[in-house]
Length: 364
Ligand SMILES: Cc1ncc(COP(=O)(O)O)c(C=O)c1O
Image (cartoon, rainbow, N blue to C red; front, side, top):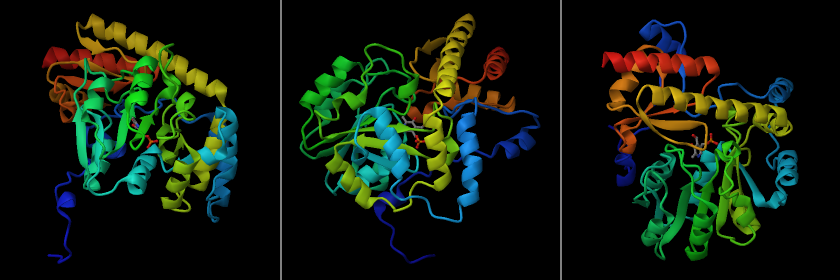
């Protein structure tokens, strides 16, 4: 037995259950093809421009990456109309979440978010030994007024996933503005816009419009979703330059790898690809809704690339789909045992998912 003392808050952590590699799963269940609709990934692939940039970049991986990500910050700043000093890059936007904790959290502080939201917020909070307060939601939507009741002078970080994973719902401009006006200046608000590029609603707030007015706001975005670069791990945060400066002091000097930087630069130039993915997602979602309705199932309308379907026994449906080679996400861990979450796939994947779901439901 190792004699190294382990802090209580680490002992009580539940390990994140890793999925099996696709090849292992194929062998285990004896299917040729696996369809993965469980991680809200881009089913199309990376943009062709990003692929080409990556192929070139691998020739140079004997060198460390540019620790300041000079060119990528420059391009992002031009595209988004902000200063490079307002940007922090991360090894996925997940790393930004962690950096925010490591930079601003002190023992005794608390963290506030919603009951059913991105699992990484409580995971990191608990790993830091922080008190994590989960505010109730309204119809599976963030209730920002309710969240205000959970915030006090020791609340250091608030997380808002907009749109929210796993519900696919969003907070409106009016709700968000009202919240920002009331939240204490000493509380950092992290607005997680991982799915920003998928949303086409007039009353959906673009977090960047509020950076100037609210120095306690950080907006997070990622290359993992619409840009199709999840495996590279690259995301970014935007905020007040002083706040960003502190985050930059805490991060590792080479936290974003060379291939990821080059791919992201190229992906930002590929508007055609982004449009294609967005259109495919919107039409796919509409098609899936219609088929789910035809199966007599309820679902939660979503503004992003995934949605919740009420199937009854979510875990059983998940397992039965898995045996057919279709991976979705069971929602029991999110206190929604009747639901599964599924992301939009290619047309063929969507069709196979619906056929499999129909078979599974008739068998169960
Ligand atoms: C709400 C939300 N934020 C952040 C992320 C993580 O993104 P990244 O791959 O940039 O770490 C995800 C990924 O699923 C997400 O759903």
